Image (cartoon, rainbow, N blue to C red):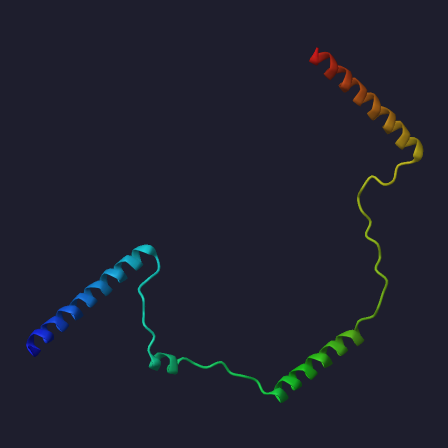
Length: 119
């Protein structure tokens, strides 16, 4: 009877191995890559993240504050000069009225032409 159970166990192990190979092949086709089981030894060999002590963090913060203070002390506060744009500038009131009249005349001719096309 033990022989029969041993044979069934070996057949089941072979079936599991075959299924694992089929899964790995399908995953590579899907782009997921093969599954890898992570063992405890692999987790233990992975480098741990290093933590900084509170004192070290305080020293670094004090040094950074000193750098900022030095930079602020060296910078002289000057008023920013306005940048001249290469635009057309402001138009006078007379020029704006003249342009307004021209645009109104243009719109009126377009409106009139559109009305004639519709009929």
